[in-house]
Image 1 (tube, rainbow, N blue to C red):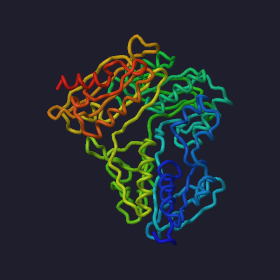
Image 2: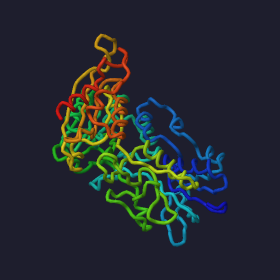
Image 3: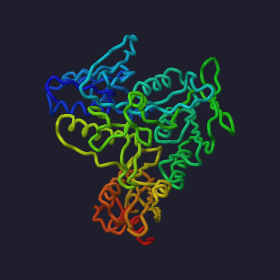
Image 4: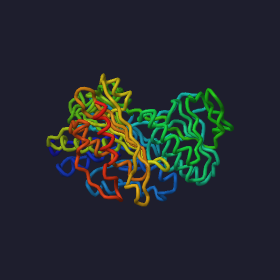
Length: 451
């Protein structure tokens, strides 16, 4: 970039501001302007359930760097600025300030689209009622926390049994609410195989939540413009507050309207340097399509770990360096009540869709040596390809100390290891941390035997 050039960033969270910060480190002469539709930059959306649940009291603790902090880096981060149009011919973005409604018009030489995702809000009767919350930006979490604090609701219904829905269920249980989770599928957490999802569902029940499975939502009852119940094909669930945890979709409408090509997942299509098909336009984070290292297919994952890495890659390349983003595995971990839940690679449904023939192995073991205090249960499931023996994916549900074991599988998947090779890994051992045969090794050995 020449010193007179300007980068405009749309989106002030993980990917956008990682790219801006990386570019600034490499090129102090480039002008950087970032537009964020919410009131915060560089925040932890993953922390919202803990804010609502009371584990985190101050929302500012979830903000990694404020606009004032970016100003010290000579990055002009403008919050409450919503970009409504990208004009590629004129190389300009146009939009409005959300606080006073005034319009703005800003030129760019290069553009980074990092618009993230938007929560899925079903077009059902009553879905626009007060008291129904979707969680997209940090301000959504702050509003929900305020509602729980001030309105003192007694009954909460979570619509959707994905990560955010179940984390919010735990948070509201912690706040003393009567919690019901309504899920259209037969088990919660569709990113796991059903047999593993059932373990998570049981943990929720044990914690006091009610689960209504196989129940698609058909609408919302309202009273005076405020939600009063969630209606399904089977019954009506009274509610003082409703949280939508149906999932998210890539926020790619702005890019599509501008003529920036999308991929088959509906997210923005980029190459491994985070470039779009439009010269001078880059994209990164939850709004873009990624490449799955196992299935070798395009995928969309809305994960902060991926967004931060992609932002860094984009920043390096924007600054004149050369970096490539290799792809993703969909590695994820969370805690739902008393269990830790993790997955990486492909689940059975995904493996079949990708055309693999495979075996599965599932084992029940312990997190520590059986005689050591605090030992807990752990279930590990492994998928491996017939013929090659290569690992395809893994899932873990268990007590404290279980979840981060998934990282060993993620490393093995990235390296293309077989189940047999994995089963002989020289993993560390001491009674406070694992049995002498770690559960991940036992599961891999069982998969190798099945092959």
